[in-house]
Length: 206
Image (tube, rainbow, N blue to C red; front, side, top):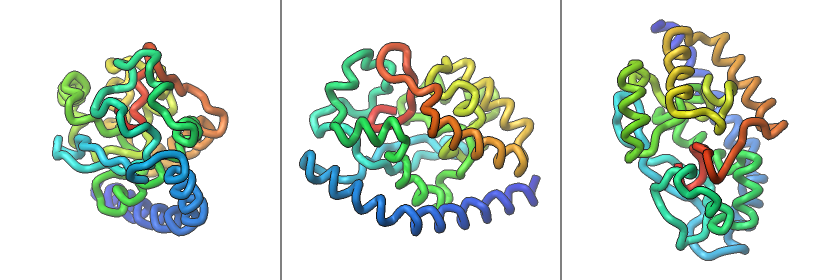
């Protein structure tokens, strides 16, 4: 497991550096579009729960208007989420491009490419359920086993169940599989749901 952890960290660093460099031109375009559409910061910063329940600040491209609710999970907003999302924000969320700044979190060691999606600081039910499964010992990820097995359509119990499976079976081969299928999910826009019943884990809400 120690060799796996070292290799995982090396892969995180290498891929994050490559991604940040390759995505730089597109990121600059996104920054311009966000600033053109609405006033306010380009990046959205939010407190999340990391390894061993230690808080950290997650980074995302801002997809919401400045007067939008903060620190509220998407599924609690029901059908109101669309009126809070900017036009460029809606596109960024659908394509998961709003997640790109998290490669900085990965470089800092606060996140990994693969792991359970980091819980919002006030998602006590999710944090407690993960504690029961021992999942909080894992570095949270940009994507995870739950994301390729239902993503936004999963209940908290089902999501943590998949997180528990990852804890037991994690390996470099499994991580590669998760990354590959995540790309397929994003391309095909599978399992993405917002509004009633959704537990998205994206944007300014979760």
